[in-house]
Length: 277
View (cartoon, rainbow, N blue to C red):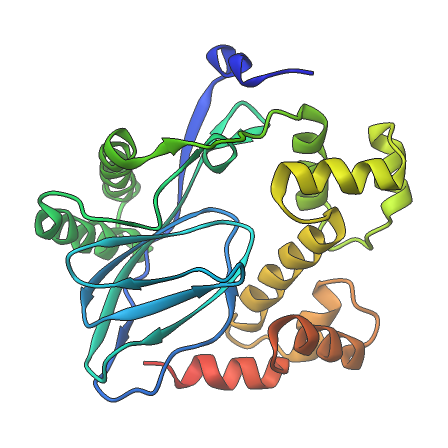
């Protein structure tokens, strides 16, 4: 089995995925729409307090003097702790080595950490975010914004990131994860995936769960759900169009599946999301 030592021979890449700055006014009763991320998600709370509740039972409260690191691969919800205005700067990024490993396969941030000079970091992130979100900004300036975030992430990682107790070293499962992500809108057929990895279905489930903490079908469903949420938030896309784009043959089946996964219907998800400032 190939091990983590192989990283010494692999190239790495940093990708800034998004840099939103959501604001919620005083008195808003919670913002508890379940979410999931497969990347590294760092939350800088600039005003107010917010509690993040993870599916594994852990919870953490973000305040303006700290950064919250949301772990990958699991659902979480957040709600305001006090009825005051709430503002957060969310950094989503991905660091990959070669074509297999990601940052979260080997390292992790603590759920909560308190960087020095946090106010200066927040000020810089505001500037980077304004540049990154404007598509009319020339590429060199947007690139410099992404580079600035990379430098900040490197600062955080150097001081606060820690090696996983059990890093993912199973190359076959890393390939399986990439296979699932590359074909997420196709039907999940456990037997087909198992045969491509040379394993039985039972072996595949056991090794994938050991590597990533959940079985491959659930990982596929979470990838599909994240894609569905993004599609539903695209302007002008109907629920039927979203259903068709994701490979569902029946809009009503899509709605039932979405409700089972997300806890609300596609229409309800849209209404709740659109009602947020």
